[in-house]
Length: 51
Image 1: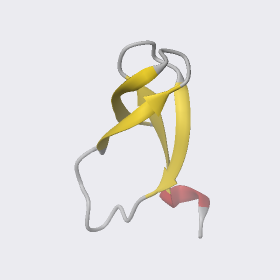
Image 2: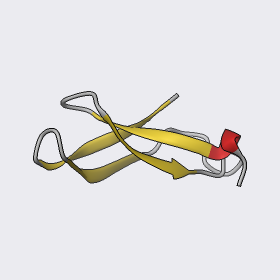
Image 3: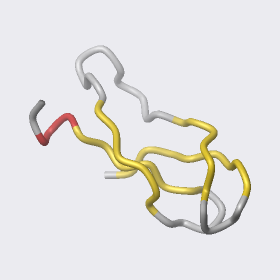
């Protein structure tokens, strides 16, 4: 898998980058939003895709 398909997921509350993932940018044009566990907050929060 190439590096240009890699995305970072950042917590919307504490702004820390916690997860890395892959995405097909040809089929998914909008930014991903997932509810994931944030170790900084200690709870499940929304994580948004960053550059």
